[in-house]
Image (cartoon, rainbow, N blue to C red; front, side, top):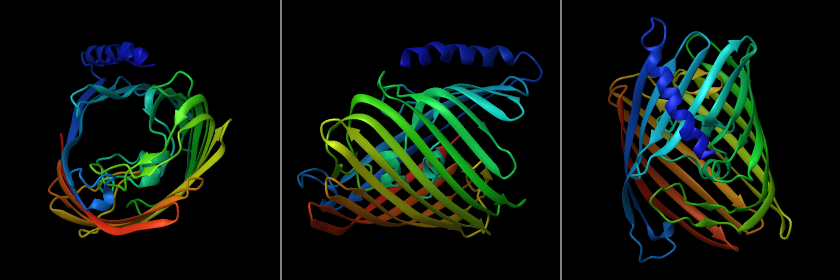
Amino acid sequence: MRTFILDIAPAILLLATSATANEYPELSFGGYIMVDHDQFSDLFLEDEQNSNNGTDIRRARLSAKAKFNDDWRSKFQIDIADGDIDIKDAYIQYQGISWATITVGQQKEPFGLEKLTSSSDTFMIERSMVTEALAPGRSMGVKLGGTPGNFTWNLGYFQDDNSQNSQGITGRLTWALVDGDDNFIHLGSALSERQLKGDEFRINETLEVYSSDSLLEGTRLDAEAMSLASIELMWQYLGVVSMAEWIETDIDDPTRGTYHYQGGYYQMSYPLSGKNRRYKDGKLGTIKAKHDWELTWRVSQFELEQEDRKAQTFAVGVNYLVDKDLMFKANLIRAKYQDDGETFGYDNAFSFRAQYSF
């Protein structure tokens, strides 16, 4: 699949470049860079000899978007944060059918409200534990979607780029009542049925601090199949956003049996300007404001049922939007976890991010 993406990527860019010679086609370039710093207690470490802090270029992404006419468009995005070129998005989209949009290539699977929110627009610096551990991300595939009335629907067939065995069908349905000022109430659900055919699956997750150790470690499974389900709720009024999501999965291992993982989060945000975030097609966007402060908080939990492990976090944050391009984020995280009946924590971590978009 990676070979196929590398093959079509030059074609996408060539189409976009050649299209700019005409009147209608549009070509745009952009990107963003995120620099993070974490400080945390020994609770977040497997080995107390390890460092209690870390500074990383978390993301450094460049993208090209092309709109050829009313029906055809494409996107190509890469990440260069770790010194290697990692292709994120590489797809072509057709919007010429009245009831559906068709997207072909590497793209985000339609699963998870928080996962589908851009990393540059999330309330907190890191997404919740359950989202990072369970929600599928980008995969190679074909997706159909539409927005009839107050509903949005998406359904696609995807194959994991890291494995020829892993493939699945993922779908999401949402309903919302929205007014002209982006005040809304939103309900949604997603399902994903995946065939893994013996691929290794293992939970290996931090306590929502990127530079810390992965303390939530699951059993190494030779997974045959995976069933994912989620439910999501969201509400926005006069700047206040309230968002909740619950995700569960069953992993079938022919030798060990079925393993069940589940978790969820509840988070809120409020910009002091009272401005609403943009909402479109079942997804939450950013705030368009200058010199605005946004207050955030989140409580989340994640449980590994068969391993008898569970973690909970509580985080508060503040985001400072200098303008549409520059933002600073700061989070204070309190966490605890249970391992085989023994409880560790609560203890603290602090994360800071400088984020610039262009």
